[in-house]
Image (cartoon, rainbow, N blue to C red; front, side):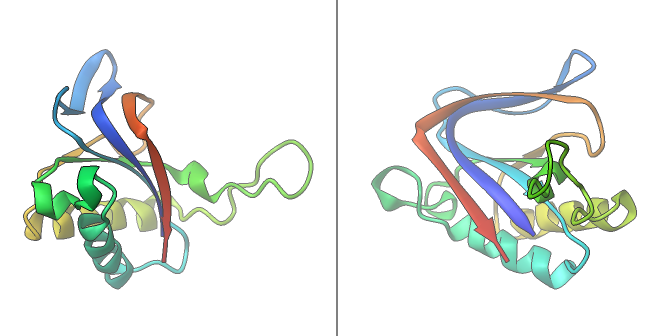
Length: 143
């Protein structure tokens, strides 16, 4: 599992012209773009949720758990793009929807169980993501 985390001062996900998930302006939070691979399982999702919730990248080296900061989770299979050959990425390392979708849900549930205020996009939808990266701070988490 890969999660590209961005510290944001605001972020939103729009599907078909409707905002489906958002972090309000003036609330520092995290945008988590989540990619799932074939070997991931619910244990991986649980460990990633703990890592993300405790990651100290907010102001003052604080974590989302320290600040009760909101987290916007967006599925992102393209994090497993293989660009080693040619100009067209291969998506072979990305897990198919029947594997990936339940694990993204498991990640969100694990975050919620830890006390996180979780917002999401819509798995598999054509999503428009807007954000204000604060810092900028962007970190790649991998398990």
